[in-house]
Length: 439
Image (cartoon, rainbow, N blue to C red; front, side, top):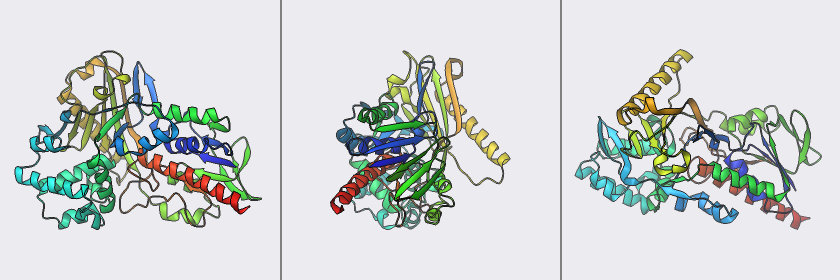
């Protein structure tokens, strides 16, 4: 069997790695960029390792990457973020983030009565009996909840940071999705971790697995321009060649899939997903020649909705000796009247981020060795909110497979990419077995 995978991000690499284990499967992985990894792309500059996006893993002991580690024989190390060094800032006051019972007792975000309420809600989620799973969205649950505003704000802020969306959109996340996500996270013994060495450690190993099979081609800088069906095979055309395949996997954002299938018989089936909105994130990385300050490993600015991670406090492999790597994150709003209004908004976010650096890391400007500001650094293919629809791994009457962080799967973003890709690979192998039995 010959398989085409279109897209060389985490999902495409994962699907190819699983399929490469079967000696009867060969294929081509097409990637239009000059490098693999997609939004998990990593590069080095002046001794600093910079990630295109964050490489934190939530609940790693219950995460899909742990399943992959066992099934694909991956080797990597991770380190847990020090929970005592995770802080929230509100009205210029720093307080511990309520990540566990100890921090919940120490935090000043909630008063004693509110803490009792919040502990009760966490306990109910762990037991899978929390009412939120019966509500269409977080907003609907909060509207009918008798909780104080501080408790509601905390829920909104937690969902914002874990689902990678703006606080105002956190209320649009489906209740059952929140319930399942936090059920896993609150049961985890390792809630927030970094893969030491960043995503490159994972993507490089996936590539090695694919290469070692000797049956797969990694076609970099080769975009697929059309997909057709003829003589019981799929015909893929690129700028320089035409190839035939038995199966096709789309491991790319749904918006790109829609463009590729435009004018084909399958275009109408993609219409329900065309209106999905994407998450835009501003990432502000600064690599410092020395550690200027280390008051915490992570801070969430609740007033301005900004997040700063001292990545090097957890992952020392990303910096030269004595250096420090800070990563600022802002989940961006959309719906601006014109480009001028959008530019003003982005400029204001940049200034807010720099002011936050100034406040907690004085002297950073003079010690900066590397700076990268990307105002559209990471675009998730779909926000996991009620007004969007995650793409299934299979669609009725469509002969393709779909995987990626915009697809149905376990967890958020990277985990959804891993889980949907694993599901697709296993489905293809199962289909192949059934075809053999049928013949």
